[in-house]
Each structure stands twice: as C-alpha cells, then as structure tokens.
Image 1 (cartoon, protein in one colour):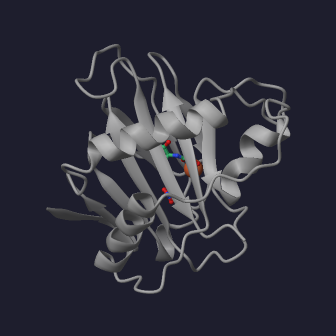
Image 2 (tube, protein in one colour):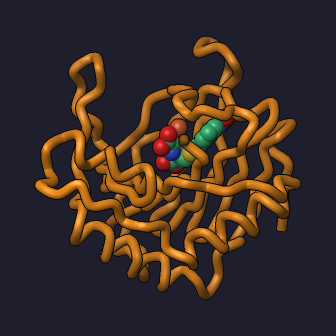
Image 3 (cartoon, helix red, strand yellow):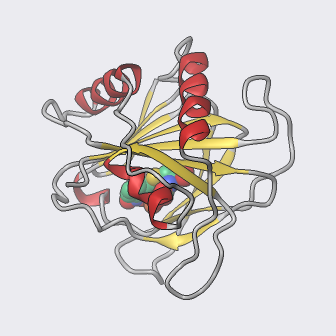
Length: 196
Ligand code: MD5
Ligand code: FE
C-alpha cells in the first residue's frame, strides 16, 4: 500500500516481497568484491553505517583504498527492474538509475541529518529500499533547522524521493538491536540514483 509522505515523497509499503532473498544475495555478492567500509566525512567523523555499492556508486569503496582494481560492478537486473518499477509507480516513468549505494546499519548505527545533492540531475528521484531491521527515518525540510517527522521504515518498504522532497534534510536514528530472519543483526538500505 502507498502513503504520500510529502509532495514528491511516496512510501510503497512492502513493495519488496519475495524478491528480498535475491536482493540480499546480491548485496553479499557485491560485498565480496567491494567490502563494506566506514567512510570518513569531510569533517573527520567516521560514519557508523558501512557502505558499498554497484554501478557508478562503486567509487565509494574505491576511493577509500579498499580496492586494488577499478572494476565496476554492473547494476543487477533485479535491482534495476525493482527500482524502475517503484519509480514508475510514483510517476517517474523515465527513471534510469546508474548507481546503487548500499548502506549497512548495525546496532546503534545512524545517519545524521543531511541532504543528497551531489547527483547531476536533481529532477530525477532517488529510490530507497529498506531490508532487515526496522529504522526510524527522520524527514525534515529544506533547512537543517526545520522540524523533522519520524517515519518507521521496515523490511521491504520502498520510498521514492522526488519533486519537492528531493532536497529535504533527512537522517536515520540509531538502530535498535534485533535479529531479522533474512539479514540477521543488520538493516540494509539500497539507494538507486541517476548520479551521472
Ligand atoms: C537510508 N540513505 O535509509 C537512507 C535512505 C543516504 C541515505 O540517506 O544518503 O544514503 S535515502 C533517503 C532520502 C534520499 C533522498 C532524499 C530524501 C531522503 N529526502 O528528501 O528526505 O540509508
Ligand atoms: Fe541521504
């Protein structure tokens, strides 16, 4: 079922159903090639969520020196189909993602309020898929100081962030301990972007 969170932001609850296993296996396959790493922010803080990715997002692990090859992992077809189907459901029929960033949250991992504005074409949405442990998502406004709403994101939930919500500040509260039947002690989030 669908919920409009804000203008341009659509939650597709449990959009991922039986595809979850394929997604999880593909995450593990990517991580064998490009291990999850904890990036350091420009301010010098090590992020608590670990990252890897495929497509144009592979620079994420390459940049931090964890890779000795410059090999790109292609976007998996199941990933692509799912992301395009979600975007189309939200009205973005021509979304062609070129990158998938994968965040892995262990207990207490969080993401502080930030905007995603490095992509070239900000009229394109970001499609976000949550797997595993639940998270409380913070959804703010166009200014860091704007008040935030809390949104629970659970296994299989997909959010399409477009239009007026594309540049909103957002974050993830610290993940609570738990064991998910598919992903164990982790929450994974996949973000599909047209980055280039
Ligand atoms: C997550 N990841 O749950 C989130 C999901 C990231 C990140 O924030 O940058 O890796 S993506 C949420 C998102 C993307 C683009 C716009 C907005 C939210 N928004 O306007 O609220 O790991
Ligand atoms: Fe973000």
